[in-house]
Structure formats: C-alpha cells, structure tokens
Image (tube, rainbow, N blue to C red; front, side, top):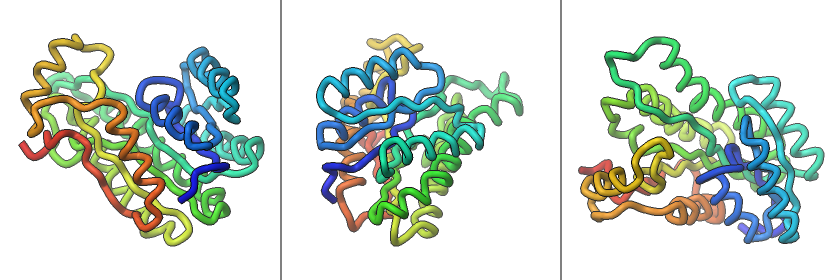
Length: 244
C-alpha cells in the first residue's frame, strides 16, 4: 500500500505513542488528523511542527466515549482533509486497580474509554474508509488482553475486548477495509511510575531480557498498514512477556 497522499486520524495523537505513530506516518507522506481530548496545547504544537515540515495536518477534539462527538470528528476530518484512509485507535487510559478497591464505576470507566471509544471511532470512520477503497484500521491493544495482570483487571478486560472487536470488524468490514491490532507490552514506561525501577523490573519479565521502544510499536503499526494482504491479525510486540 502506497501511503503517499493518504489521510490518517490518530486518536491520542498529541502525546507519547500516538504522537510517535503520527510522526512516522507523516514521514511517509500521510496527512495527519491529530485527535485530543484534553491535550489541546500539545496537539496544536505538534500540528504546527507537522505544518512547518510541509505535512497537511488538522487537530480534532473529541471525548471518545460520546457518540455525537466521535461522529462529528470523523465528519470534520473527512470534509477538511478531503478523505480518510487510515484510523489508528491509540487513545486509552491506564492505572492500577487493586481488587480490594475496585467497583463498578471504575470498571465501566475502562470499558468506556478503551473499548467503547475504539468501537465508536471504527463505527463512524468506516464509511469514509470504505469510500477510500483501501481503508485500514489499526487498534492499539495490549498482550495483557491475552494474559491479565491481577492489579489491572479492568484495563486487561478492556484490551482483551479490543482484540475481539478487531477480529469481528475484520470480518464485517472486509474486503474494503482491513482491520488489525498491535498488542503491546513493555515499550513505554508509564508516566506515573519510577522510570528506572520500572525498566529494571520489566526487563526480567520478557523473553528477550530488555524492554522495547516506541519505534518497535511504530514499525508494527506501519506493517499492519502497508501489508495489503493482512487483516484480522493481532501482532504481539512485547519481547515475549506474555509467554513467560
């Protein structure tokens, strides 16, 4: 798949992994719609950087748990950019949820943000992706969806459901739209944790004996986009952690 001239919307594209994915796609000639919910300053600064590099860009604000806002975001992106070819569902929430402190409100928070938000983006991007003729969706999930962590149960359940959603959408949207997922592991330390301590602990939990990098995730995402015979694939990028 030739990426030059395509348009991608990246949820959570203003920061961290979302931004790394958007930057990589922009280098391949892809115009970028940068989604944000609260990170307006970061989104606008990033869009300015892209524009200065000659990349067409747009910032779009939406609470991904609200259907009308997601629908409006897709409509605006397709209208202002002229088309929509690629959707990257990167936005998610992540924090520790010990069983003794867990309740229904917190559980639903994860399902709303990580699962429902991904579904709504796929649902309202799909018509534009089909119109493109070779649309692609890449969902960012986690190998914790295969093997849940006890201190992060709602997060793991939400990401496991994204895996199932990916497989279902691959069947529903074929052949016009391909749908794949990248299941990440230890590629980017959580902001709220001690970085050095986290890296030391995580290295010992992988088969490769090291943590990954955002670029490892980025290259997997691009593979999912560029390989025109790939759909319904869940690609683990975690150094083999989930097998240990």
